[in-house]
Structures are given as C-alpha cells and as structure tokens.
Length: 187
Image (cartoon, rainbow, N blue to C red):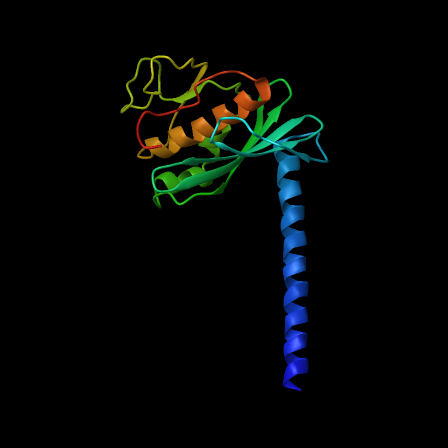
C-alpha cells in the first residue's frame, strides 16, 4: 500500500507541475499581448547578436517583445519590453529584480517612472542634457540621446539599468547601432 500511495502522490505532483506550467505559459502570453497591442500570437526568434542585455526575442504581428536582463544596483533586472515595427516602445514590465527595498525596488511598480519610456524610440537617458555620470545622465559624451527621463530619486543605477534595457530592445527592432550603455558605473 505504501508503493500505491507513493505512486498516487507522484502522479498528483506531475499533474500539479503540468498545470502550473500551463498557467505560467498563459500568463506569459497575456503579458506579451498587453505589452504589444494588436499581437495575439508570438514566435520565438533566435538571437545571436552581441547585445548581452537581450535574453530572448518574441515576434508578434505588430512588433516584438524583447526579454532583457541587465545588472542593476543589487542584482539582475529582468524586463519584457514591447516594441512596434516602427521602433516605438508600446509597453514594458519588470519581471524580476532584487534592488534595494524602498529605493530601486520601487521601480517595479512606479507607473509614472515606467510610463516615461512609452512611445520612445531608443536613445533614452536618465537626467537632463549636460549632466555628468553621477548626477543622472549617461556618463558618455558619445551616446546619442533623443529622450531624457526622470530617474527614481535615490535609485540612479536602477533607473539607468532600465533605460539600458529599453535602448537594447529598441535597438534590436530598429537595427540601430546605438550605445545602450546607460551608465559608466554600476552596471
């Protein structure tokens, strides 16, 4: 009877794992559809480029959802970013981060901060034109910046990492050869 009970527990475990996997896939599809309006299905595109920030590429009917990962202040920041065929950011969400609670971690749910990236076309930097690396700008005089956004107070490194992810995603879709290095220090 112990063997029968063990087999039953094992079969329930497999069924539960399968259900959890299917639910995770459905949730992932739903999120991608929200990030890239008008797209219903997605196919994984192979990525063999040189941008280490790009983890995976999902092609939809109206553009791409790019999964990015880059180093923040306290660890990796994983994002999904929707980019239309014309190179505009249609949506973005942070999927995982380990930033400092109360500072960088607030980027995960700060809608005002994240909304600044919508409809941008790459070349995004944190701060204002002419600022140095420690006050919020890119820290690089060679970066072509089209749009400056306000970072999260006390979380400059985190803010710059998110900008770097957005720039990488747009660069993939547009084929632009931009420097997506949003900061010269801290990732």
